[in-house]
Structure formats: C-alpha cells, structure tokens
Length: 386
Image (cartoon, rainbow, N blue to C red; front, side):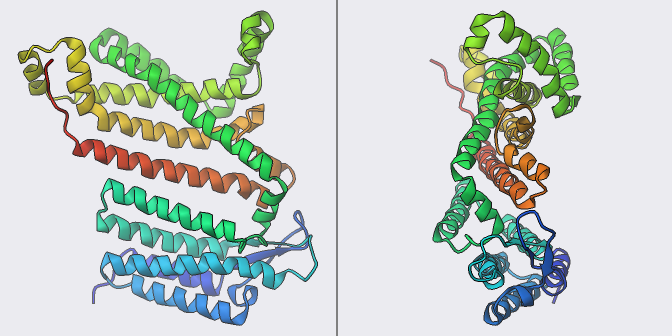
C-alpha cells in the first residue's frame, strides 16, 4: 500500500500533540502564569479515551493513499470530537465555585486542530468541489461552529469568559472591523477600476501611477497610519466641513484612508493585467459588429478580465482584514482593540478574542472570493451588439 506524502507529517504531528504536548493550560486567574496539562490529565477518562482513539484512527487513515472522502470523514470526525471535548476540560479542571480560574487550549489542541484541518483541506482539494459546493461547505462549518457556541459547551473556556465580559463591545468592534476592511475595499474598487482602465489605455500614465502605488505599498502599516495623522489633524482644525464629517487625526479616518491606499495597487495592477490579457480577436469581433469603445469595455473586456480583477479584490480583502487590526493603535477600533488590550494586560485569552475572529474572517473571505473567481472563469464573456 502506497504511503501518502502529506499523511506522514499530519499523523506524526497529531500523535505528538495528543500524547506529548500540553492539551490545555490551567491558570489560577486570567493573568497568572499557566500550567500545561496533557490530554489524559485535562479530560475525564472516558472523554480522553474517546478522543485519543479517534486521533489515532484518523492518523492511521491519513497514512495510506485512500479516497479523499474517507480522509475527509476521518478528519471531520476528529475535529468535531475535539471541538466537543475541549469545553469538557474547563469543567473538569476548574474547582467548583471558582470563578477566577482560567482554562485555555494549549499547543496540543492547536496542533491537532491544524493537522486535521490540513488533512481535510487536502481532501476537499482532491474532491475538486465546484464553487457552490465550497461555499456550501463553508456555510456548513460556520453553522456547526455557531451551534456549538450557542450550546454553551465552551462557556467554561477562558476565551469565552473574556467574551462574556465584553459581548456588547465585541460585536461593536467586529462591525467596525468589517466596515473598515470592506468599506475601504469598495472605495478602492470604485477608484481603482477607472484608474486601471486609464493605465491600460494610456501607456504614458501607467508607469508613474503604478510606481507611486508600489511606493505606498512598501510603507509599513504603522508608519503610514502615523504619517496620515498630521495632515488629517490639520484638515480637521482648519476646514470646518471636514471636522463636521468626522475627519480627525486619530480614529477611523486615518485607518480607512490607509487601507484605501494599500488597496489601490492590487486593484489597479490586476485591472491592467486583466485588460491586457483580453484576446485581440475578441476586440476585433466586437468592432466588427459595430460596438463602441464603451460597449467593448463593459461587454467584452471587463467580462473576460473579471477573473483576474476578482483575484486582486480577493488579495485586497484578505489583506485589509488583517491590516484593520493595526487600526486600534490609532483609535480606529476593530478587533485589534482586544489584541492590544490583551498584550498590555498580558492576558493571552483576550489577545485570542481579537485574533481568532480576524483569522476566521480572512479565511471565509478567501473561500468566498476564490469561489467567485472560479465561477467567473466558468462564465465566458458574450459579445453582443445593441
């Protein structure tokens, strides 16, 4: 029987994490030093035996070259059991009536999760699911996680206790994070598409515009946020209309503007590349049926360039979701508020409260836009004349 190249490291990682690495960390309070507990110590005997059996079985199934469906089922079973049992560790380790103790997933939990998530992703890739099937799978996973969180099985974990203390603020900052990331992307697309068309059609403009955007892209995010503070503060102080609109030196405005500037290069560059890749025969055919330049742009060139343009949009959205975290340093809000508060208080669970949703948002955005890119590739542009 042939051995799968990915299965060997996945199995080794999962078995090491299950038997040797700490499964959870127990703390006397939210900022105290933690004590690692291995899986057999962290869970009741029956739960530990079940989880270990599933991890060993899924690891063994990862080794041979089996059908992707079998590997997907094995990794899904391990991940579901892992998610259901991690909450039991908090109940098992926390003394009755103790509201100060904290139990958090440790390296063992995260390594097992990573190993079987990697195996599941590889299986899904080999199954070659279509765009709608991938979106459906994402929605199914999101629904399962939502039901697990709503069930209260994870409420004893430290990250959920941090959430319970900040639930209203969490959703407010999450909305602000999404507005910063998506709003700056929308404005960048509205500005970047015409600019990309101009750069494609006027070669003399292309090099200077792309050169400036490349320079902006090389500026570190914190430095760009800082650079924007002074001019925006001056604008707010000297232009009453700007102050009335909420423009000021710190807060959401410099964060939004910085994300917009970072978003321009992928949008403009991919628009130029996409339009340059339109076959000359398609344009000639469009001219032959009497289409104007505007008609050719919207009915021929944009449809054919759409997959490359959407690839740029995907890059921007994932980038913005990550960069919006830094906005908290200048009062821009977002999930970064919890990350930097946690760093300041040496409360790693508070850091995770901001970091985990950010990673989940970026992953979901990548899956959705990957599906959109593939769907646009499968839909050929139609040349029509009015």
